[in-house]
Structure formats: structure tokens, C-alpha cells
Length: 272
Length: 262
Image (cartoon, rainbow over the protein chains, first blue to last red):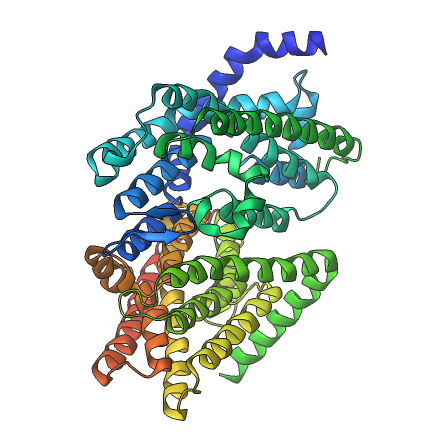
């Protein structure tokens, strides 16, 4: 394992360079993928209209129009930075047999895929930046968090959110070794993600479901950094948020690698 | 005409047979439909728990829009998009030549070449939502409204189909478009909500530029019974115009097909 990791470390610059080259080569597709993230904007349009006359109250919290603007623009930014489509990529490569090529390389595919998707982050930032400018110029700017600690935690929180998302999708991709069609699973994942991550609406509007959502991994993939950005948390809440992210990162990472190990044994290369 | 219907039936039978070959997948897809249906409805439930009305739309009325959305999407994802994804593959590999050689219209041939039969669960779900919404409203729709609602469901599907064909025609020039189809799908997502709940500028875009409102909001108004004659005619005319334009663009596009095979 030690030598494996040092191999990855040595190959990392090259892997990242390949990732950048891939993103540039498929820039049109990359851009369209990014543009398909319209759901937060739809919800932004809807909820700001709902809260236009009076703040929307659910449970202990009430959301004004400005709260919703801040929330959904932050959601859009986090989603742009942390999203990836590795599950789709892997199931396609298993089906076409291209996975065989990856297995020949002396680097664990987890790291190869991770590096290739990490390399896209600068490009994703280019998309996220104008959204951030809009956010700062919008009515939502007034409700953004100003606590330096929360803003400082934003970077590790985003990194952990990226890692959990990536490991989760990698685990789903590894299911392609067991099932012929993993698309249905990936769709189920996205359905649950939409609801429990805060993608469709702030989690505290969910009422009783919010208590369940607080424990599921989805919250730590999207809502956690968004909460850091848009509302005030006390220190205990911050610790729970980041602790939860760390725990889920560890769980998803383990699950992904175990599923991969079990799955790759069953792999029979399709095609020449 | 009977020849086209027979063709349709044969293609449907083949798709059902191949779908049944992956029975586990069929079950998963059925469960998925149900999960999506619930998730689709949750924001609606929450919005109307805090408000009795949004932009003059009540909960049952908004549910009917949602049902139209689920219904149109079921036809789109069950028949139109898989067929068009298939078409793009054929254009890329050159096997579109064989489609052109067949003694039937190429557009008819490719528009219904592949089905995902489990989307029928969504269609059933959509009907269930409509029934539930009318139970909440307390009175069933009148026969005339029901008829108009069904007709407008048809024109809504036609409008969506035309939009997707326009998108597919682009494949003759650019080679691939699976992503473009995703993009169109995510724009279509706005159809979940009555167009009136969005800011004014969006309403114009989603009524006239990308006429999502024609596919869900207006048909729902017809079924509820508050669509006036002028809007009804405009909705139908809009859908027909879109179909005509898409046919013309398709004909132009097909002329620039130069076969990828040697």
C-alpha cells in the first residue's frame, strides 16, 4: 500500500495534466454538463416569488426572499465545484471493456479517476466565479455569513464535500461490475441526493424529514458548505458539521474501495 | 397509415421483450418512478403548507400542472429521447443509411425506434395525481374540460417532441448531442411549476422562447376549466407551429447527411 501511494504521488502531476487536457479537449461537453445544473435556479425563481410578500416560515426558521437568493446561489456554486459524473463514466467503461486498459496501469483507478476529476476543478471555478459575483451583488449578500471562522472552514468543508461526492459516485460506478445496468441506481442516488442534500430546498424546511437528513451523507455533500456560507452556526454546530463530513468521507472512501476490490474480481473484459 | 401503426407495434413489442430480459432492472425502474414521484411532490407540499396560494395557484391546481409534467416527461423519456439517442448513434456509425433505404418516412422510423416501457409507471402516477387533485378540489372536471385537457396533453407532447426533434436535427451537423438532450431536459424541469409562479422575465422565456408552459401550465388550466378560448387556440397553434418548424428543419438537416460509413 505504501509503495502504491508513493507511486500515485509520483504520477500525480502527470495525472492532473492529463485531466486538464481531457477537460480542454471535451470543453463543449464539459460546458453543457455544467449548464444542466439548472435546478437551483428554478428553485430560486420559485422560492423568491413565494417569499416575496412575507417571509416563508417553517418550524423555527423563517426565510426571506434574500435568504433564498443567498441559499440557492450558494447551492449552485457548491454544486458546480463538487459535482462529477464518475459513476456514469465507470459504468460506460465497464460495459465497453475500456476498463481493461485502466486495470493494466500500475495506479489504482480510484486515484486515476480522482485526479482526472480534480483537474476539472479550476475550470469549474471559472463557472462558479461569476455566480459568486452575482451573489455578492444580489440582495442575498446581506445575509451571507461574516464570521471569519466559518469562512475559513469553508475550504476544508468544500474539499470534504467533494471527496464524499466523489467516493459515493465511485462506489456506484463500481456496482457496474455486479449489475449490467447501474443507471437506475445512479438515478436513485440523484433522487435521494436532491431531497436530502438541500438541493431542492433548505433542509430546515423539510420538517420531520430534516431530522433524518441530518444523519444521511447527502447533507454533508452540499448543505454543509452552503450552511457555512449562508447562516450563523455556534461552535458546537460547526464541530458537528465538520465532524460529520470527516466521518462520512471515511465511510464512503472505505465503501468505495471495498466495493471496487470485490467488483474487480468479477470483471470480464468485454470486447477485444 | 396502417403500415406506420404496424411498424410502431412491432417496435414496441421488441422493446418490451428486451426490457423484460432485464427483469431486475424493470423492478428497480418501477420503484424509481415511485421515488421520483414522491420527491417531485415534496416541494409542492411544503410550499403550500406555508401558503394557501402562490400567484393565484392553489395546491390541487399546482398538483395538476405537476401531473402534466410527469405525464409529458414519461412520454419523452419512455419513447422520444431513447429513440433520438439511438438516432445519434446511427448517424455517428453510419448505419443511418439503412434507415434512409427503408420504404417509410425516416423521421417516423427514428422517432419511435426504442422505448423504455417502464415509463408507463410514471404515466399511471400522473393519472393518480390528477385524480387525487380533483378529490381535493371536491368536484370532478366537466366532460368538455376533460376532453380539452386530454387534447392539450396531446399537443403538449407534440410540442415537446418537436423541440427534441429540433435538437436531434442538430446532430446531423455537430455529430453528437447526448449532452444537449440533458440540457433540454433540465430546462423542461421548469414545467413542474405553473409558469406564473416565476419572475416575469422567466415567464416570457418559458412561454414564447422555450414553450414549456404550453406543455404543462396551459393544458392544466384547460383541465381545471379556467383556460379561455383564445389561450386554448394559441396553445394548440403554438404546438402545431413548433411541429411544422421542426419538420422543416429535419428535412433540411437530413439533406446535409453525408454518411459516416465509406
